[in-house]
Length: 184
Ligand code: NI
Image 1 (spheres, rainbow, N blue to C red):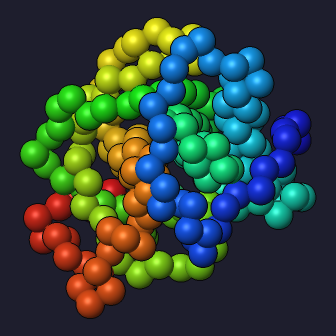
Image 2 (image 1 turned 180 degrees about the vertical axis):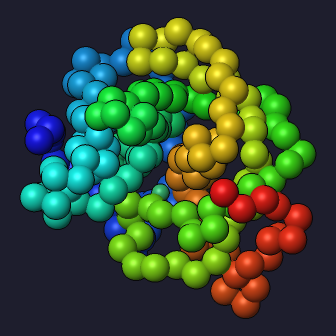
């Protein structure tokens, strides 16, 4: 069982999810920094089967702070290594500086903690991309991400720009781009 602080996550009906989040200035407020760590603990808890079941949590590997009502350009991604440990990505003021031509999509559809229903359709995204961002201490770094982590980063970056998966899928043609992208 993992210890964690629970969060109320904004639902898709909340129009604030379409806000464009603001650039962050450093140093971060210590409270905000703590919230970032708490959100990572939360995501790890949601990916832990026993904890998720006990507290009725939907599993999630990424969250943007706008989803908890903090409209700053910050997202986190938690990578389940499958052995009870997790990779932690803290991504502040992110920019994509290069991307692969190849596109990929999640066959079963992307999940989003703000969308509590099945959404039919796929979203082709870059298979690999390089992000430039800052960590919680204001240090700039570049990171190359691929496959599911690449999708997670692009999904979360969309949140910072007020874009949800439902905005990316055309209900009249929900599998658009399937033939030119690889399923993962
Ligand atoms: Ni989401």
